[in-house]
Length: 303
Image 1 (cartoon, helix red, strand yellow):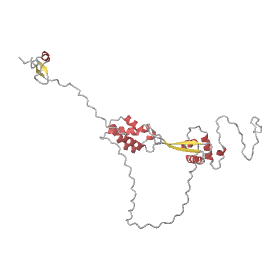
Image 2 (spheres, one colour; image 1 turned 45 degrees about the vertical axis):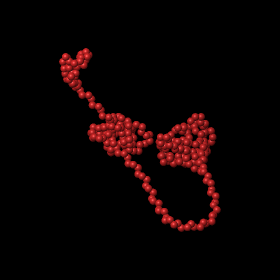
Image 3 (cartoon, one colour; image 1 turned 90 degrees about the vertical axis):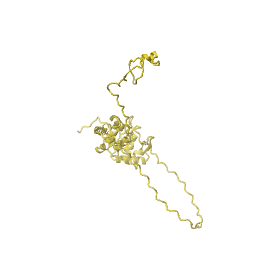
Image 4 (tube, helix red, strand yellow; image 1 turned 135 degrees about the horizontal axis):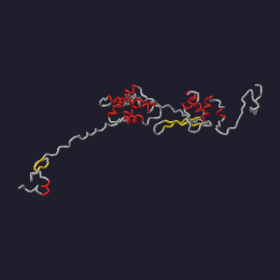
């Protein structure tokens, strides 16, 4: 224990017992240049300074939303959100919100390695002081009666009630069971579509109405699960009710009855030829056979 380790590297400068001693090694890869105006900021909290250094070290396109940062660091979402607001207030971060043509709202985050000054407010032109004008004589008293008091503003019209859910025309127990199983299994295609028992009972008649109109269960399942929004579904039951109502297919056309299976239509009865008395099939008596018509005897008088 008292033998000196001669293999340990000696310190390049004497240690300072009262302050920090820096042992600096030149970085050649995987480093980030951060200004002292940030790391020695006099107002920012330590959490905000560390978060700004981490954000500046990330590549472009990396996610820096609150949930992603909270999953990366032990600080909770509240402290990270407060640190981001500090960086925005001091010009090191900007969050720009933009609405896409589809109506979805997205947020772009911009990081600055130099603090940006806050936008200057527009200077307002001071109004020139008005010179006092001499008082005008009071107008004569009006002879007309005073106008009626303004009526109270009309209340905004209430939004129309939602359309009722479709229902089958005729009850069918097998069809209702298929609809219930279809709704209860939607979470296998998307975990966000896990419905409660009450929601399944409410939506099952609407699915049965689709099946009654000739829709296959796979087609109904595709109509309910296709093109779902990427945002978290707060009310999956309301989304499914809207699709079942608005996308309801028309009634299927009636299936034509198959031709009767069995003997063909009865042939016409036998009648004698009007000329040669040969038996021929014809619907009405007084007709001529094929040979008499070919010989032109169907027009000559009988002998």
